Structures are given as structure tokens and as C-alpha cells.
View 1 (tube, rainbow over the protein chains, first blue to last red):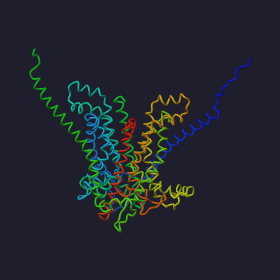
View 2 (view 1 turned 30 degrees about the vertical axis):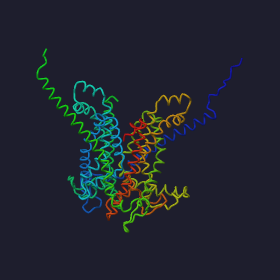
View 3 (view 1 turned 90 degrees about the horizontal axis):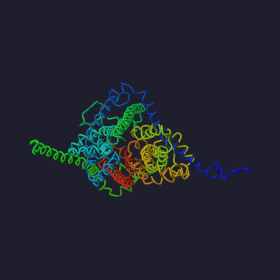
View 4 (view 1 turned 135 degrees about the vertical axis):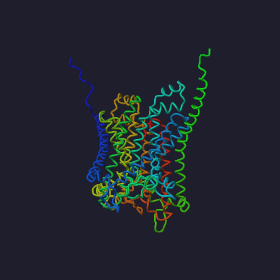
Length: 294
Length: 325
């Protein structure tokens, strides 16, 4: 008796082949899309660095801009200004943001927490130029532009970011810790300040670093609050202070190629700081997640 | 038997008082911080409309139907910028959504495990680039490139459509360049949310589909995409909100327009770019107030869009954890 010849052909035929081809096409499209995004990132970063790095020097970082405009000066006024403005903004946003997070995770009833949460998230999504307009109306109209007004505007941008980040780590703190405190008769506020916040500290730092990275690059909130500045290095927050983003914005709108050169170099400084801060935050996040057992 | 030291009641009562006051006080401080946040949102709405009041009472709703923005005649309207905002944001969203979903699928399903995290971080890094730097790159690199290579090609192949029929500009400062920049800005937002959404689809469902003989793409189309549909909608809306409100990079590359032009090769203006671009140059009170009126429109759009996104997110919980910035 001859062997039974197989009835089923295991090689892909007609329909199955078409399905496999479609699958292959779709997989390639997905890969291409991811490649495209990464390529764009590389193109942007490489072209900023290539154009900016040649004019980056110690002189550029530490000298003041030329008195009568024009390129060839430094950006020390903008570096100091950005540091002060963002520093003050952080000092405002972090305590308030962490307190909001504590309220939402430790105290608020569900409905209340939900409402405030939505409002925090909506604040995070508002156009930052509108925030700038608001602070302009609040602190600049009738007075003058000031570094403090810029800080307030940036702190409004940072507030929801800090609150959100703090809330997420507070939620990761094991509830056994809370219950343990309560079982030992520790009062709520001592438990939060003494046990829960320290546990969540790493995550809060991460969130703060990310918010600082974001705020350092924000231009729109500063346009109306701290954009008309002199070329002197100043730490006086009651007057308008120079800052890197607005400087890049103004230089980029000028038709002068030498100013463009300065804008590129300033962009290298800004992008370097922002990307390093984001990377650092990513590292910290991974560490604090591990520590909290997630 | 009274073996308990007699000082204990005193100690505990003093301690209890401190604890109770501390609890109350701490609660009050955290509540105050939360109310402050609510108050800020309220104050933003109030202040912006107070600043725009002069223009609002002068133009009322006619502002929305007037195309001219004429500082010489001191007459202002928002229609040009509404058009610019709508076209730039929606087209950017239209381009960014399929791209982002594809990236999300690649990161959640296809990418080799070793490089998955790396590529996800790189895509998110794209979102960390400050908009003013992206705008600088847009003016000096992307714009000239578009004008020299992309625009002429589009003009030749798609010249029969009104968008691509017009004259190609010299420097590439145009609606089209703004659309490209906005797309670059919102792709990382939508793709990182999509990725988390796709990862949150139960593995049993995916494995079930594969076990029934579905190819990977059929599994994606039949299982993953349907279960992530509402989340994708929320991600799109969040991306849209970003695009609508982006002021700086758009101001840098869109060129600034004084009249309506259907061509995407021509300069245009959006609500946000008009406000940002004229931050120092408002010469009259009416113009300044009209600029803030534009910001007020932007604010209302921003509020509505964000609230819609949040409602969708809250209704479908998995997105919530995914939507963190």
C-alpha cells in the first residue's frame, strides 16, 4: 500500500500568504515610524550642536553681551537670569505642588480629589502663553516687567507637573506604612511628614528635576513678564532679567547671521541642560521605583 | 492596680493636643494649597477677560468674523488667526496620529526587548526639546530645506489643490513648515500615551487572538486597537491641545500674515503666534486688549479641549496612568 499523501499543504498559499504579506507591511510601517521619530531627534540635536558648538567658548558663557547689541558678546546675563528665575519658580512650585499631592492622596474624599485632580490636569494643559498673559495682567500692568513675575509665571507652569509627579510616588508608598503608623498611634501629620514623605522623597526629586527642565526651556510665559532686559548681569528679581529662552527667541527673529550664531550656541547650552536633566531624572526615577518595590 | 506612672495622662493629653492641632493645621495647609491651584485657574480666566474687556466690549462677537488686523485703522478681528490655528493644529494632528499609533505599536509589540526602553526614551526626549530651540531649527534649517526641496516637489505633484497651488516662498516661513514643526511636537505626546495603552491590553486577549491563528497585524487590528480606541481619542485631544496652544515655535516659523491665503506655502498666523509675535509692539490700548482677546479665545478653547480629554481619560481608567507628562 502506498503511503497516504498529505492532504494539507503546509506551505502558505493564496489567502494565508496575502495575510502574511499585509502583516509584514504593517510591521515595517511601524518600524519605519519609530525610525523616523528617532531620526528627527538626531537631526535636530546634531544640527543644533554642529552649528552652535564652534562658537561655544568660556568667553561666551562668562562674558556680557555687547552693549550696543550685535554678536560677539557672551550670555552670562541670560545664564544667571535663567538660573534665578527658575530657582525662584521652583521654590514656589515645589512646596505648593507637594502639599496638593499630599492633600489628594492622604486627605481628600474621592469626589473632591477627583475634581481637584481634573483642575490640576487642566492647568497643566493650558497654553503657556495664556499663563504669561495672566501674570502680565497680575504683576506687570501698572508696574514693570520683573524676574519675579517671570518666576510666578513659570511656577504656574511647574505646579501641575510637580503635583502630578509627587502624587504618583505618594500613591506608590505602601499602605502598610500608613497603617503601621496609625496602629502605633502616630498622628496623621507626623506620619506624613516623618514617614511617608521621606519614603517618597526620591520620586519627588525626580518630578522636580523634570519640571525644572521643562521650565528652563519655556519661553512663552517670560515674553510678557521678563523679556525687555539689559545686558548687565543682575540677580535683582524686581527688575526684568535676561534669560536664555527669550534671548534665543529674540536672536532667532533677527536677520543678522552673527546673532543666529549666538542663538545656536545658546541653544546648545539650553538643550544640553534640558536633556541632561531629563536623563538624570530618568535614572533617579528607575532607582526610586526599584526602592519602592515597583 | 495603679502601676501605670501618674505622669502618663498629662503627657498623652498634651501630646494629643499637639497631634490634634497638628492634624488640623496640616490638613488646612494642604487644603489651602489645593484651593490655591483652583483659584489660579479661576484667576487666569478672570484676569485674561478683564484685560480683554476693552476689545470685547468694542467688537463683541464680530471679532470672530472679522479678517482684518489693522493697527493703522485701529481695527481688529480674529478670523485669520482662528483659521490659522484650526488648519495648523488639525493637519498636524492628522499627520501625527497614524505615525504615533505606529510608533506606539512598534514600542509595545515589535521592538526587540533590548532596545525597547532606549527607543521609547529617545521618542520622549523629542518632547523635552524646548520649543524655542525647535523653532530656531525650524527657521534656519527646516524652513530653507522645505523651500528648496519639499515645497517645489509638493507644488509639482499636488499643485492642483488650493493648498499647494501658490507660489513657493524663499525662506520656507509658511503654514506648511509650522505644520511640520507642530507634528514633531505632538508625535511624542500621542505615541507615549498610545504605547502605555497598548501595553495595558490584557496579554490573554492578545495571546487568544494569536492562538486562533491571527497574524500579528490582525491581532493588533482586532484586539489592541479596538480596546484602546477611547484612550487614543484622549491622547489625540491632548496632542491637539498642545498644538493649539504652542506659541513660540509656531511664531518663529509661520512667518506672520496680514491677509488670508489659501496656500500653505504662504506665511500665516495662529492665535498663539499672533499673541507671542506682538508681545512688545502693541501701539494702542485697543490693539493690546485685542491681543489679549485672542489669548482669551485660546484660553477658552484650551479649557474646553482639556476638560473633554480629562473626562474621556477618567471614564477609561487605563489611560490615566498613561497620560502623565
